[in-house]
Image (tube, rainbow, N blue to C red; front, top):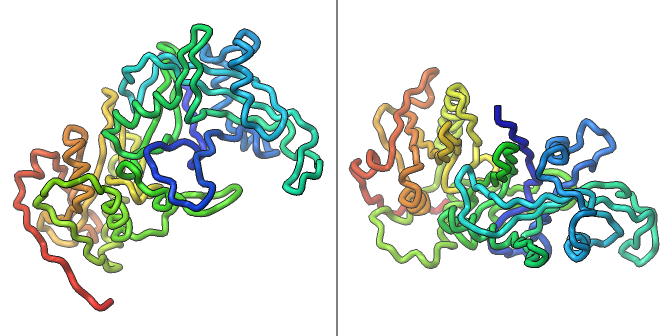
Amino acid sequence: MTKIVRFKIDEKSLFYGCKNDFTKGHTATVSTPINQSSDPEKWHKDILGMIDTEARIDPSTLPEMLIHKCQANSKSENIIQDVFIFDKIMVDGKKIDSNCQFIMYIKKETAEFIKNSKGKMVENTHLGRLKLHYPTSFPYKADGFNIDNEAILKEILNLNKNYAYIVRGFEYNCDNKSLNVITSIIGPFNALLSTVFRVAKGTGKKLRTDFNAVTIEELMMNCLKDDNEDFDVPDIFSTRNKSSRYNGKKGEDFIFDLLVAENKDPYHTSVDYPSSPYDMEYVTTEGKKIYVEVKSTQGERLYFRMSKYEYNFMNEYKDQYELYVVTNVKDDFPTFKILHYDDIIKLKKEVITYEFSNK
């Protein structure tokens, strides 16, 4: 049986294709603390599982310059405890066509005292802390290595059809020694970071979930400045009332539970990333990633609206796209229909006029 080591990373640590519109900070932290808590039960034991695999390289066997590069950009003394260099990279189960390598390493803080913001030496409360690092930029092409993390991230952007994405975690296949990068699309290229993350320091949720659907659609469309195609689907963002939002959530929850019951192990993308152009995703047993959009209605008629942003995405991923239309959504037993790209484009399509209101 194939052994696979799976581990998650911090929610605001590795993303690509976004535009940083914050006045300061909020770049990718490109690391995940492993033993941040004093309680070992809260440690990132999934990451520590990598140490027992053949992916681990003993730092003492690596060139001194490579280890020095891993240690750079740290505010305190540290040692590189474990290094992982991957030659075979996958993205959501699809192989990357690149001869570059991707590096990660575990760094351990060793300084007993550090300077605080006032320049005074104080006790380092993080002494002994372990962090897994996966820098967005790490070129090292010497000593037989061809490490280039940014080249890999750019290739992932290309495979994701130039949509901005976030890395949620990794899977390491111990048999074929491949690293699978698990991603979710969070918006068009140059999607604003302010539509994904909120201003927050320290531990706790960093994701921006306070936008409503209309605001998200408008912000995402403002990013699509290079889209000059003349679609029949209008740029319309109708104000959704409380009932519509309730129906949408009820429909999504219904389909999510359905996918769970079918053992598809879905991820409810839009819950964490409202800026995503789809609602859920799952990977088939054949390794194909499927993007799921859910539309809901109270009546029996098969009817739904699709924004230009959603329409663009459907066209990009027509072979990996499923639309679940939930009808009678308020009933105890709603009904649903699964539509694929060919089904959708055959439906009658109406251009709806803009809506005007003083509220």
